Image (cartoon, rainbow over all chains, first blue to last red; front, side, top):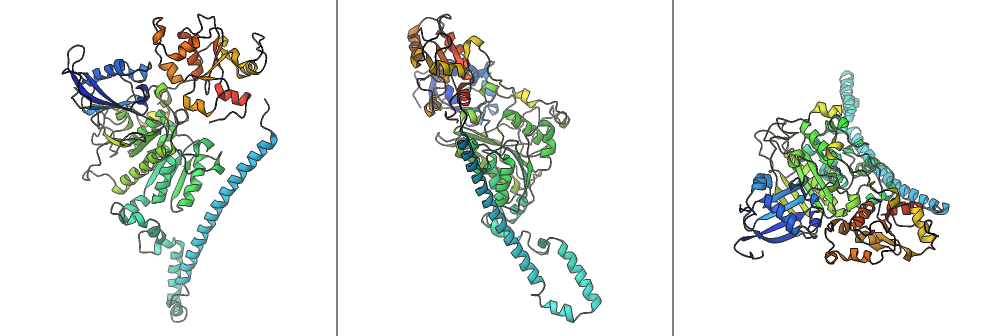
Length: 110
Length: 520
């Protein structure tokens, strides 16, 4: 885990699976240090993390393969510390230092 | 161009027939061997029940005629029922031997084996998932295994669809699988449904079975199968795979009626909205590693065995494992991880008290799953002056340019192949430059004239403003999107340079120009 840049940052792990890693420089695991407060000064939640990833981490121009209508597109599961985010309050979940957030795109091949 | 020479065609056909013949001989040998064993067994039983019996003598010589005929009448009645009725053991002799290695495990035991024998499993999709799943379930002695698939075996299936073989290319997958499975375990009844599952056929097809395996490859079929399983109260083992990744879920387990929150979540609870069609990648486009999909199919068989041998769900039975999603990534460390899933969704369209998916709606065909999931039609976004046929492009390469009268030269133009690098390296047209579509499409539309920040492939293309650009890809879709992108970057200098795509891509090139160009 990388050390926070300053006291206002928290260190988390963000992972991508099911092909989503292709949108994020083909890296499955990203160790990030991100501001603990969003632009309005509210504590960092998963909803804001998604925006942050889109603006700061995702280099691919195909944003709509990750975010659609302001939220994670259908067909992507968001998992907070190995549990479906719907068990944790979805976008309102406040991110804690050391959290693991996993984005999984569903597969359909067989 | 000339089609394949007749000699070559015939040689190919003979080789294919010979492979099929070898396959059939092998199956015939197995079937004859099996028949031989059965005949021997019956002979032995008949032998012991007549001449070998010391009572025979008394029956023939020492018993009152009336009594004797009565006894014979009773015995001959017994002969009409199968021989197994005579045994006092719940399984047949060969079954103790065949299933011995799993019978001695406490997880299975006699009761588990009887549950397997009395159960029926429907496998929908007999491809990369369905083949290994079927092999293990038939091997384990499930009483009836149903197979649903409308496709025929193709050569490109064989690296992963292990029930099919070279000689069976062109045969329906269902027939091919039945041949393999019947010879693997003749005790199992194999029921075949040679058609793609449709909303109208779903209920009648799934009804007779105890458990369903979703081994299909489209979102539409996944929603249809899940909805039908909820309506009929069947547990569902769902898996999928692509490239190096796989996913597995046991859904609707326990399979309680819609509205009962103690039931397991269904596919719609986990994915209430289908993914946008452009985000759905098939194995044909994305690729698939055989053992990855094979592993997921084997895990489906395993989960099915666990559900069946556990016995029917009752209110006082121990609650099943909490719903989870197993994620497999062959190139990640660790390769497996399990994720806790939500329970039934309160407003689920299929399994809640407010469900709108009903048997009536399904049977009437008013639920359009293909429309629900959307589809992408072939790209058709360029005008006729932005496209060239393979025949005309071949003329540019090999003959005088029909437009300019120029002599043929590979230097006269730029040919861009936008397939991904790994595909480009498999085979390409001489002189083509590889600029992968992923790079083209992920480059943001430049808003300023800041040429320094643009990728090198754009600046390289600016260096030869006089040369027309032709774009080619595998099938002719990405090439059109790429032409649009190149124009957005003003590589046509406001219309002063031709940029167009080669219609139908390398597939059309192979079909019309160069039959030896590899097909993959």
